[in-house]
Image (cartoon, rainbow, N blue to C red; front, side, top):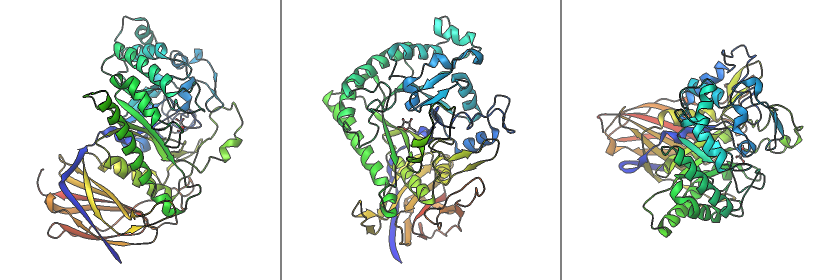
Length: 504
Ligand code: AHR
């Protein structure tokens, strides 16, 4: 068996992880909201119409922030349609997904649901068909105490306390021709700046995310980020990254190496942010919000056949495989490796739409394969990220050469005195005998060893077989002289937790 070494040195501190790196996303799209989180006729619905089984599954993921209400949907959305008495809310055509939107779930209802799942709102404003005026009114409606038109309107809707939304997105994917009101980088940069100014004049405690490119294949990628930031640098706090991974045209080995795309994307956007910083002689640092990331390809063809103007038709309901879950585990490692600059990230999305949680109408909900790496990383990956030095064999595949079989990051939770190691063995056929060097950490013992491994690459969970692809609890190894020896099987995502001897 081939060998590898992982050296975890406490001095290789990357950053204190911002919890919002475990964010997610719910859009008015398909069955995410209606017949997803909200199904008033379901036997498990609470008095507000939200499914309690879904609430429980979301709560377990400990998602600290959820982006809402889109996505592409937000670029044609009038937020005023979704507040106030439900019976007065208009039914509208949504041109993003060619559906009919009833507005029965809006800001107030979604906030109530967020309270149930212990999550904060990350609210996107419409910079497609609307602009700075509607955006600053929304900040006033959400965050101003009272004694102004929009805040008093909120109070008249029964909501005395402001929503106090802290994190806001300045539109969505404004570079994409599919977007209502798409723009050139200069047009968007100017609009983002003016909107940001006015939103912060209403409430200077808010943080703003400017739109970056929709993905790295956009013809304006890189130039977009540079031009937008040159315009809006002083007024925004983050720039967004979006990417969806697809296996179409790839072999499994190349697909599992997809974390390299994320590493590269993040490094490129950091470089552009810092280029603009240098150009402006600015002291301010722009951080990254990877506010849409996931696998998405299974439904790309079949969704083209969906009839127009239905209410909440099933759409983008990708059924994720074991190999998708391995990739998602690897992407989480990549986010943590870059947690010095990636402060917010949103798994897109959360329920039914390219989601870790699936529901059936009137029936059960279940966890998809990707639920598990997200769950373990979110629950145990809080604290300080530590870079892992990796000595591992490499492979060549169709898309890349010299790819390390292992990718890894560690996280120290100082309060609990615990160290957690996340490792992906992305080789499709090589098990590795791995020596983990933990000497700088004074490890008491290994307390948990979980692996997602050993399934057919195409294996999935379903409502009939919800537990076909789940991680295994493996025996914990014995640490000796600060080393632990273990075998990391081919195509496996692993989490090892260690109790430390003393507080660090
Ligand atoms: O998450 C689905 C869609 O993907 C979002 O609406 C859009 O922002 C992206 O293209």
